[in-house]
Amino acid sequence: MSSPRTTRRSIVAAFGVAALWGLTACGGGDAAGSETAAGGGGDTITVGFSQLGAESGWRTANTESVKSALTAANGIDLKFVDAQQKQENQIKALRDFITQDVDVIAFSPVIETGWDEVLQEIKDSGIPVVLVDRTVDTSVQDPYATWIGADFEQEGKTAGEWVAKNAPDAKVFELQGTLGSGAQVDREKGFDGVVGQQVVGKASGNFTRAEGKTAVEAALQTYPETNLIFTHNDDMGLGAVEAIEAAGKVPGKDVQIVSVDGVRDGLQALVDGKFNYVVECNPVFGDQLATLVKDVAAGKEVPKETIVQDQAFDQTTTQADVDARKY
Ligand code: AHR
Image (cartoon, rainbow, N blue to C red; front, side, top):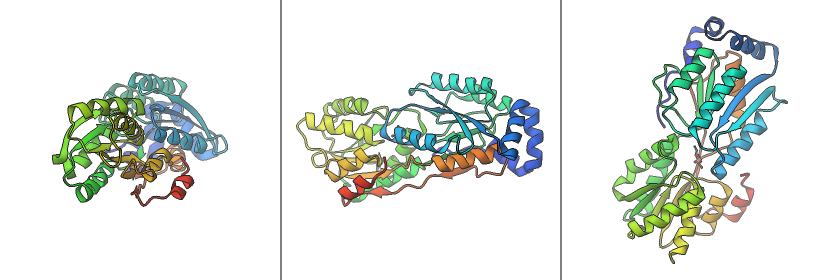
C-alpha cells in the first residue's frame, strides 16, 4: 500500500474538535454548517460516493456493501456515481459533489495519480474526504481525512510466499490489474519482493475477465515457458482459465493460478482445481465506512487508516465454504 499521507482530519484531530469548527468555517462556509448539523443533531449526512466502476465481482460486492450500509435508515443520504473505470468521470463526479455541497466526499480512485487539482478544489471547499479501497499519490497536503481499504502489498507478499514454498521453480506470468492503480502497484511490489526473480513476463488485464483472457492468450505465445500465473484478481484469473483451456492446457496443473480477491467464482475455481491459491481481498466494509463517514461528519477523531482484514484459501477449501460465501 502506498503510504497514506498526513490527513486534514488527523491535523484537525490533533487540534481537537473545538478547533475543527474554526478550520472548517474558514475553508467551506456551508459545508461546515452541514457538518455541524449532521454531527450534532442527528440530521441526515449527505455523502457523495464516486465508485470507480463495476469491473469485477469484488467491485460489485463492495458496491452492495456500501449501498446497504450508507442508507437513509442509517442517517445517510448517499449520492452514488459509477465512473466506469474512467478517471475523468470520477473527477467530474467529485466536482459535482462540491457543487452539491455534500457533507462528505468518498471515492475509490481508479489510479493513484492525477488528482491534485480536484483534491485541492475539494480541500478549498472544506468538504472532508474519505478515501475508499485504493490510495492516491498527490502533492496536495492533507488531502483526505481518513482511508479504509486492504493492505495490497501484504496480499501480493502472501501470494509470493505461497509460490516460494509450493512452486519455487515455476516460471511466472504476472497478470496485472489496472496499471497505476494502488491495487496493481502494491500487489506487484509485494509479490515481486518475494519471487520477482521467477517472473518471466507481465501484462495488464485491467481487472476484467475479458481483458485478462486476452492478456493470457498473448502471454502463452510470448512466454511459452509459463507454468504459473499470478493474477491480481479473480476475474482476470477466470479469463486466464479460458485462455489456458483454449490453448489445450489444463489450468491448475499445466499452468497453476494464484489469485487475489476470494469472490465466490474464484473460490469455486479453487474447489474445481483450476485455481491453486487465493489471497482474500475483503470488499465487505460498508458498515465500517458508514461509521467513519459519520465520525468525520461529526468532527470526531478518526484513525488515519483502517486496514480491512483478509485471509487466504488453498485447495483444502470445500464446496460448503463456497456455498457459504456471501459474494
Ligand atoms: O481495488 C481492489 C481491486 O479492484 C480488487 O482486487 C479487484 O477485483 C478490483 O477491480
